[in-house]
Length: 97
Picture 1 (tube, rainbow, N blue to C red):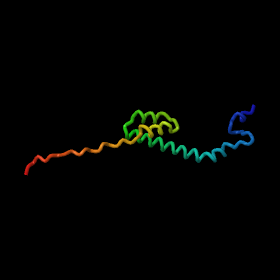
Picture 2: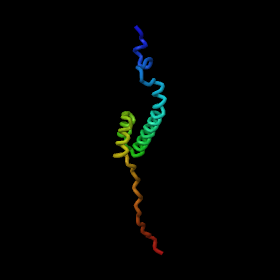
Picture 3: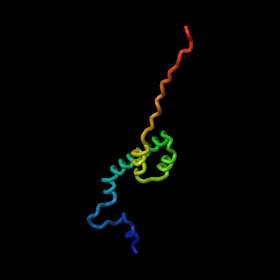
Picture 4: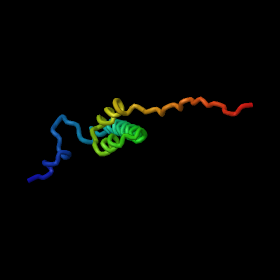
C-alpha cells in the first residue's frame, strides 16, 4: 500500500496547481487580510476599553468571528463617548468695594 497517495500535498490530479503555486499567489493576499483583521480587532478592543464596555471587550477578546463582531460593535455601540463639557457656573462676587 502506498501511503503517499493519502497525503493531499504529494499528488495532484492533472491540471491542478501545486500547493506552493497557490500559496505563491494567495500568500500576500492572506497576509494583508490577516493584518487588516488584526488592526480592526485592536481598534475595536481599544475603543471598548476606553468607553468602559467590559462585556463587549471580553466578548471580542474571546470570540473570533473573522471581524464580524468587531464591525458590529464599531457600528452600533462603539461610538466614541465624548466627555460632557464643563458647565459655566456663575460666580457672584460677594465682596463689596
